[in-house]
Length: 167
Image 1 (cartoon, helix red, strand yellow):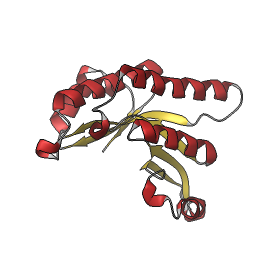
Image 2 (cartoon, helix red, strand yellow):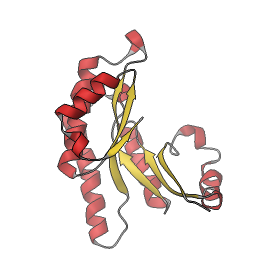
Image 3 (cartoon, rainbow, N blue to C red):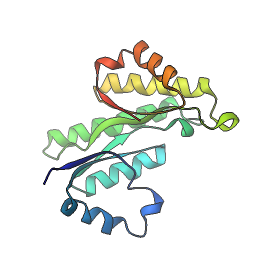
Image 4 (cartoon, helix red, strand yellow):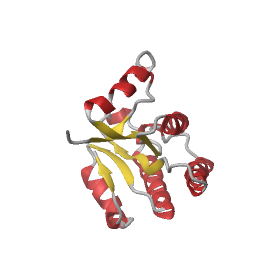
């Protein structure tokens, strides 16, 4: 049987609280060999990293979704970098590396007036792309109703020379 690689999951989400363990334990028998669980806020960075350390075939992407950037700070970017650097230090000591990307980052324009302001989304998208470049990690990009702006940002940041997933 071919192995399935799920490059974008949110198994730390509260919707899985009742059956998370059953779902996760069923995946290998159903051909799912690897999963990247993607964070969407500073809070889910914690839950995503914890889950990745607990589940051998699950890995983490750490970042903040455009809907959640309103209260971000530069200290949060340092926290994200700290998670990655701690993960790398643990890997140097023999523990498998578990943080494999920066994400879910990008633009969310589908909510009209309810969107986080575009300039704020742009600021934190650019900063998280810079973080991915600094840490030499691929990105997981959320781009809803924002294809042109996403393309222009990736071109400006020369992120296209790296790797990642856009959805």
